[in-house]
Length: 377
Ligand code: PMP
Ligand code: GLU
Image (tube, rainbow, N blue to C red; front, side, top):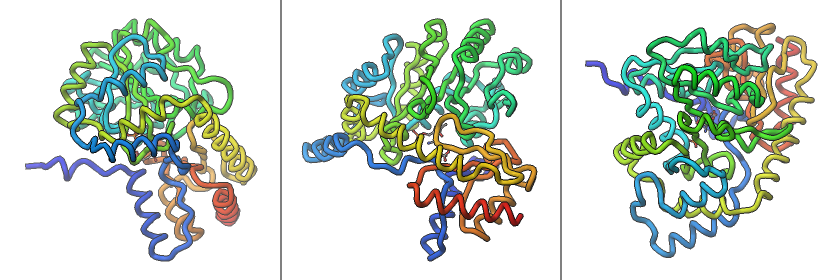
């Protein structure tokens, strides 16, 4: 009998990060720009809240889909007036809950690609089928409603949309989102929206799918404290969904996850209750890093900066130098000690992803090495 453990491949982004860390631990001079996680400290108020909760022995279970006071804090911060709020251990379990509850075996989920590495497996774990919908570089990696429409069949249940997008950094303009909402309404599809990078938009305002009232009856919107408050390891995510879907998701979470971490809940309340200063600082730091690496890597023959509008990734087209992105990354790591993620991990061969989640000195060192490597390639 086939066991799931043998057929589910591990997350490439997480494995590469560990591999690069292992090389560093063995004494190699490695610049690790693989995993996308914020390297700045979480808000001090969140740390204090954890310590206070620990002193008060708040270490028992909390409700499966989160405590009422945290749900209130999420509702206030996010402006999610309609629908039910759910809390869980990061965005991942909420994404799984949404997919599991919306899809049955054999259903199809439209998946704009390049996409986050975990999505195809999450869809397959639900017995459903990911239907890749290519996003063209010429359109800034924003999926076109017409391309989605051509792939809709009687089995299509949902669209899984991540914006700002990991790995391309694409930020969807309002009119593109409007067209997508209209299409999903016309075909009665669920919109599963992953907005964990909503705080990382560097030009203009971020438009959430929640901003379209007519989307709300079919929208399951997922966000988390991992990126916005530098709390990735504390595992705390939040979502808003129409009541019946939220009920099903809460049931799933009660069996699959149990409940969110009681201490992380307290930290999240403190973080979500802050004014906008923390978010503004984070955005300024990442904008300045983005500008730094973009300018340091521009003009390298054979390398094109294909995307960098939002999130914290530079999306590089290296296909003119080396169509095999895995080989490119392996050689870059071996010869120059810089770890990047191959585009294949996001269903986009020929590209590589650079996470600018390190400080300016490290980024300068990485950019110098990448330039040297490419110029000699
Ligand atoms: N969605 C996207 C697009 C991501 O890049 C990540 C990476 N952390 C996640 C979800 C998972 O977030 P969390 O840590 O909150 O589970
Ligand atoms: N989201 C990050 C990344 O894409 C963290 C790793 C993961 O969750 O897959 O690198």
